[in-house]
Amino acid sequence: MTQVGHILTGIAIGTVFIPEKKEPRWRFIFFFIFSLLALIPDFRIKYWGHHRYFISHSIFINMIGILVVTLFLFSQKELFTKLGGWKVLLGGSLAWVSHLLLDTFYNHGKGLAMFWPFSDARLALPISWFSVVKNLPRPITWELIRILLIELAFYGTLLLVVIILKRTKIMQRIALRIF
Ligand SMILES: [Zn+2]
Image (cartoon, rainbow, N blue to C red):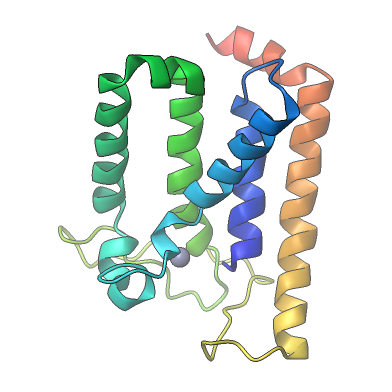
């Protein structure tokens, strides 16, 4: 998936988990952080991202990352509460691992080897309209624009549906039934 799909999914998950009644500046930072969380496996840093795909896209390595952040937040009770507590921690973790799920949607059907170091198995859930962007760094081509617009339309619709469900309080009713 390109950044478009990942960012919109991060924002959609953030919409579900954002605490009520916070000022606009706080909400902006909140959604910015959720967008970043959904991009973590692709961060362009040494020994990470596409340089070390098997590490950065391993579900186990990312779970360790989430565990480290969780332990840090537990040691900073005031910060943890300020950020929104358990609800935001759960949402943030989902935004982070959503990256791996979205990367299994590529239509090349090769899937994602996300079980390193325990298995070479690949999870493939190909959706025919999600193409891979080749040739990095990317020249702007019609093919790239087409790929980005498809993701914008698909994940933009997902975000819109989540916002509508949230506004109409349907999600709260679903959550009440589950818990
Ligand atoms: Zn990725």
